[in-house]
Image 1: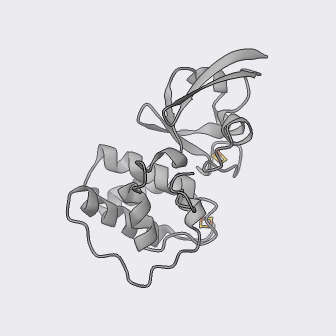
Image 2: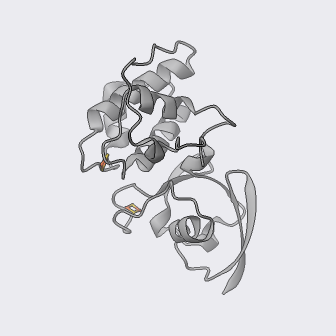
Length: 180
Ligand code: FES
Ligand code: FES
């Protein structure tokens, strides 16, 4: 065991933990942050993605000792107070989630993409997102949501679909209390 200090979603946490523990386990089991999901546990599916220093990181294969002191953002940290991040809002407007399991990775990958490239082409979106797997095949809606979020972030937000359902809101970090 070792003393490890983590900074997650703007809060500092002091932990006494095995330094080789995967970051994903610490987020879910010690910090009660369930946005990142355990999919493959091998760094191959993207369900466990978090953002560290602007990079999308697969937390299932990252030892917690390697991210001490770094600013870590999980899905729960995307919303700003009561306002959803434009990517989260686009996910609702485009009704992206199906079962929801992969959506943490889809959303965080989309955010990192738009932070780097505010107006990606369809081909650029497909290439960037290609390693983030969805067994429900939501890929077309993911692409549409990224385009919508890009417009919103550029200040030209389109109308939300009137019939947007609310299923799967927990999978985008928008359950009852936003980002909790
Ligand atoms: S659970 Fe981490 S990449 Fe699949
Ligand atoms: S929404 Fe079910 S795995 Fe992607």
